[in-house]
Image (cartoon, rainbow, N blue to C red; front, side):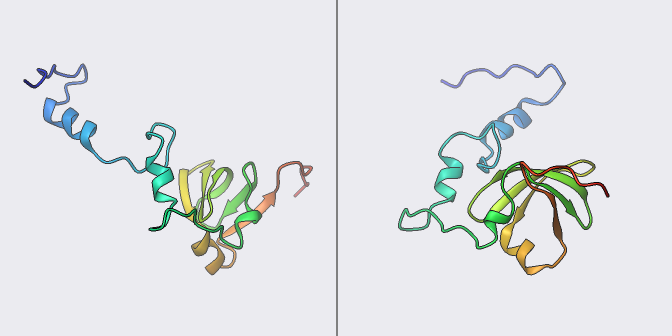
Length: 119
């Protein structure tokens, strides 16, 4: 027998709450269950994807500037993408292939451990 649903404190309908609980997880954030992102990183044979050639250019902690979104900091890196927290535009996950294919889309301002340069 299904568990009765209680109304949400914010007035959200119980069907909306149910939809949120059953929505598939992307595996790209801290709240996603372990395994969803790890499965996405494996090919059909179960092998890890190889790193994109420009992956080493954007280690975690690198300060960058996007041509549209402005300044930000790389928060995480994966073999084929990085997640950046932009000062004005929030979180964005960028494909390293797209970044490599578009010159000046993402410019490195400072890598972790480098001193701040006067601009």
